[in-house]
Length: 425
Image 1 (tube, one colour):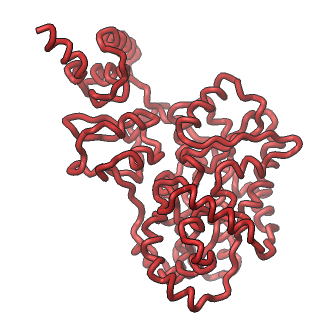
Image 2 (tube, rainbow, N blue to C red; image 1 turned 30 degrees about the vertical axis):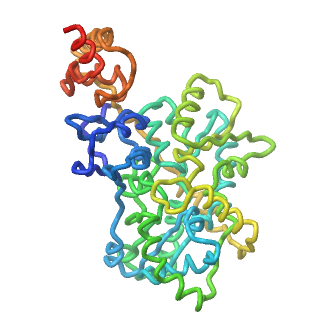
Image 3 (spheres, helix red, strand yellow; image 1 turned 90 degrees about the horizontal axis):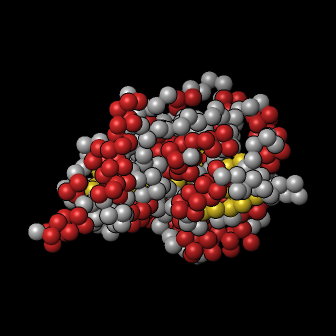
């Protein structure tokens, strides 16, 4: 079934007044979701996967990320913050990790949980899943929402290859909710608010519009940069008066490129790590061609350098990686009891339903009209220069031909043809 009428939430917005129509965003969008018409960029909501490439490339702050306001936590009696593993790398080395975590309590949270708490368990879960599902190869990590949506949009035949288990922060969310159910018999679950502090817009979108592999478990998502700006005012005070607080530095490896694959790899499991959206697309194409069947598990991250490269982070990803590695090296984590996590996994509480494809290629609902439009696209392609320069506002000449046939553009939008015609005149 084609879901062309479905409304998608996106954590990216365009400020038209700032847009100059430079087309830089058009050229870096991996799903060809952006067009520039009349010197203003627009985003096709069906195609956008919230990878954040356009946010990173825009020099005019015309495309900006969005996340929830911190005021949202006031709607709940008990507030829990779950911090991404990349959080630790955002602070200078003179700020202890425990202090950066404690500072969140000053913002109004009652509890702060770490993604790093569950990553050791997740490695065991992934290994078990790989060994249980030997008929699927390779299996893709489901941790990066942008990659999951990329597969929905451009590689739907590979959807069965996605790991059908919750991502670490959602597993931790589920654990927290289960604990509250058992520890507070008279507790109204609507009083409990769980919020993620995330490094990229894709995770914000996953919280607000969970699809298939992303159940609606959290109540909001906050930008790493926004939270950093608020907690830094409390850091200095807390450094002079730190409290005893548990931290789980060893699990911070999740934020680093390549480490998840290294940890999952075993004598009977071969793993591959890929980061950067262009590299991800190339690898997915190879998997479709059965060129990488020798791998059991592939970790795909849309951000270069992994989660530390997310567009909502503050610190340079290489500096953040160095700081996290130092924390891991010096770590002495408290003992973690994962019995409850194992029980939830065995009961199928982390299992998720398969994703449906997100169709973006339908030219017309009527098959005869679709064939007619395809012929028209090919006719326009013979007229266009084939330079894929994006100066017309479409990412490629094929995309422009498609836009013309769909009534969204004109052949006169091609500046190369216009220049040729003006010379001929």
